[in-house]
Length: 337
Image (cartoon, rainbow, N blue to C red; front, side, top):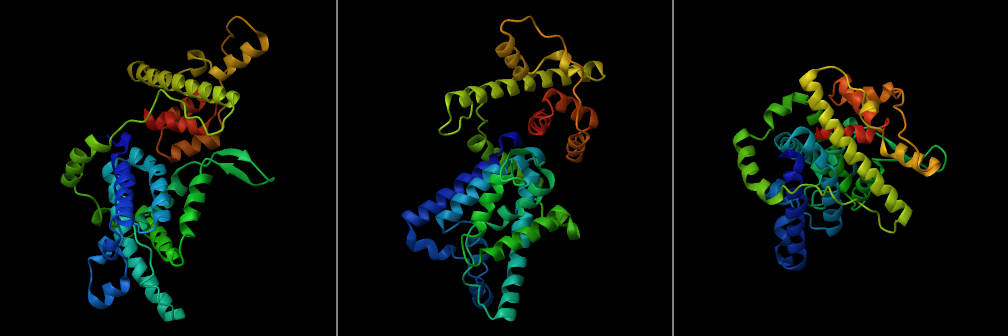
């Protein structure tokens, strides 16, 4: 099942394990995984285009790329494993061509031989994933610092990408080639979707082999508590998790009822959010149940963002009302149901 992201988890674990194995136990074999475009050009060592672009020989690059792949698993859940794998394959192949062009352009323009100094590993597709991440994942502000600067739900991913971008002297060539290939594949330039895609028989084979090993579901009974969190913060996070779980179950139930009966749903009549009930209990003590509040005003901008992601206007309105205009929670509702 794509919602369990077996391909992302396999890309997280297998290359990282091989990189550690080469670094700690088999350092004499690292020369076979060096990404040397000069050897490809002069000695026709075409195999280096494959071996040199799969396993990272730098553990820092391994760590950063693994974290990024894990965070980008949302695309496998949204588009399915086959389409996600096709994007990775397409960007991996296109970036090799772009890297060769960039290396030759740098050599002719500045006299710098960068062909023997490119970093190894599955890095270009990781940079390519920043293209759909920038285009299709909504930006939601989490906190504001230093006046106009704000922290969003995407800030940490960009920081990880910047760390990877600055980890070597010539990794910028790999980064630019990945971004260019991501733009080409995402915008379907020259119909690369039809040319560079995973055949259905291969997708079925890897689904049969990878899913039993890597398709573990996300933990649903434990709250994710940040390191060093105080008791109040832990209580608040657990309350928010319980709130989201309740809204998810109510959302699924309401959608099933709407499919059977049709019509729109008054979410505020179905259930009041837990945060409102908690605040009422804190302020007024044991008070009788609050009467249903009028329909919540929904931001048209957030509705437009959800519609751009492919959801209908009715589903977007219902999800935003159910989540008290929390775009992240509403997106999770619609992706998981």
